[in-house]
Image (tube, rainbow, N blue to C red; front, side):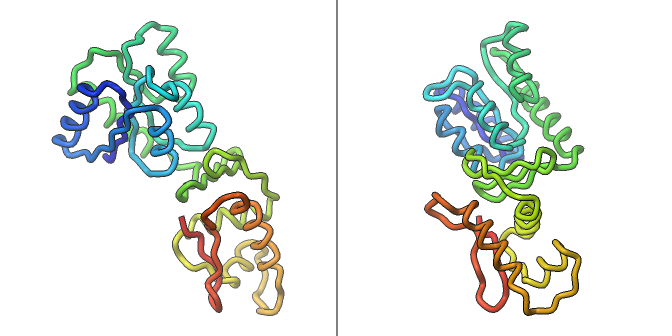
Length: 222
């Protein structure tokens, strides 16, 4: 498992990182809610250990924003706030499990392994490519937590590009996938839709994600 720890307590954060790393699970440790959210929303992890009482953004705000952005990484809330109301609120906000401090490290490890197993048993309904997230169930697209409104054709086009993220997708592949038509090599319909999609996905952001590979097609680089 590759794990993200979001915990402001220096002693506990260091102990968690050391213990989980020694158990064979690489860890990234963030000390506040804002940096933890940014790391969780732009990098891929198998699970997140999340404290509730954090500077900048609370743990509840972190998980709410992650779920709104389409990030479905399993989250284990780890906190001293252990009332039934606290646990219910955490689970409703999107946490997959809730462990109250103080805790036994073997139980923490077992719970992390369990939520990762459950996540692996479910077919993914979200595609992630860097800051870009596509929710297949709700047909919702976000970039850095900013929602992008797409037409059905643009959504299907982006879905195809994201499934082949990092690989060149030819105009023929796009035409045959989207319109199930024979490729004639003369229509500019693909270029028209790509340009419209690029205008929505990349507009207002410093780094363009949809790039043209001259003479070959397009690639989504994230």
